[in-house]
Length: 151
Image (cartoon, rainbow, N blue to C red; front, side, top):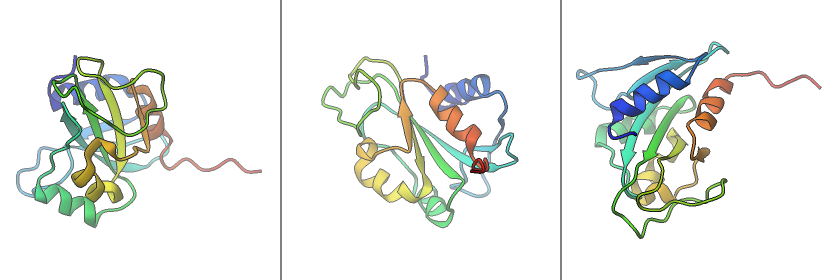
């Protein structure tokens, strides 16, 4: 069960064969994302980890500024864990079921360009990938930088 960002980090590390993750513990430069990733396509990306029990996602002003300055390859992973918000509404999900208080953890992946919408609207913003399993997130991250097949 995920209760902290550290638990989310451990789940990613355990579930992501083929992706190297380095945890960034940086107190000197506020706002820098939590993880630096490198996949088999030789593509680097950053990943900000967030946990929430409701629709609202909390970002520091430094995190917002960092994501505004960085483009493709800067991503935000949000895990919505079971909470008390029975009136939670989120972006449309592409799986059967739905988000409910006390239900399973849901995972949402966003691009940096979505940061201001995330601050304003939280999980009501459509993710680039989302669902009940971390596997879809890992599949997306593994595919970053892949060349399109030739016709």
